[in-house]
Length: 206
Image 1 (cartoon, rainbow, N blue to C red):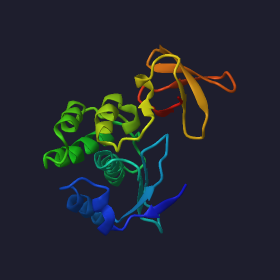
Image 2 (tube, one colour; image 1 turned 180 degrees about the vertical axis):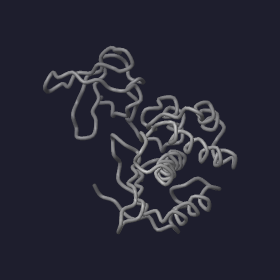
Image 3 (cartoon, rainbow, N blue to C red; image 1 turned 180 degrees about the horizontal axis):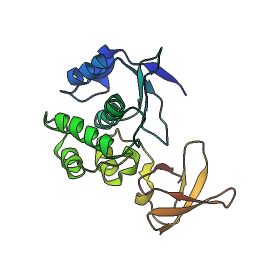
Image 4 (cartoon, one colour; image 1 turned 135 degrees about the horizontal axis):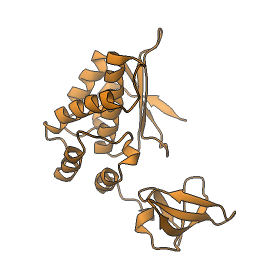
């Protein structure tokens, strides 16, 4: 996984206006080693607690738009704040983490950093945030409006049944019907069946 340490002077290119100073304050206060990574399909960010010879470590995917980057970073900072209070004695996304994430997110919402549609979505789930930004389908749909548009990229739910699409690694699939909350898709070369989240981003094959 390629990654780079993020010089604090460059954070402005990854964060929305009005958030940079407060983010830097948190990073300095808790001696956070922040790295920016290439795209990871399964996670948007990651937190590792401090050790004897290492600071707290947070990584965030560098391909995210500014609002998604900030939300992900705050998600990981909430893990840090929870660890500072409770150590390893609690569940990673239990009530203490939800409380910390809610408080830190509320502070940034109050600064009017987010567009109205993102702010409304965040406020709606403020007291019971999803364990992963990847798991909050409605938030993904809203935040994605601010992505740089890429030709051929779609969410699985946007494709018609029978559409052929590919994912990273060039595997090709045919979209099937929804089973509960996921779409049943068949890998064309092997016939194996996979279940895809409706908001998983794929590339349509013409």
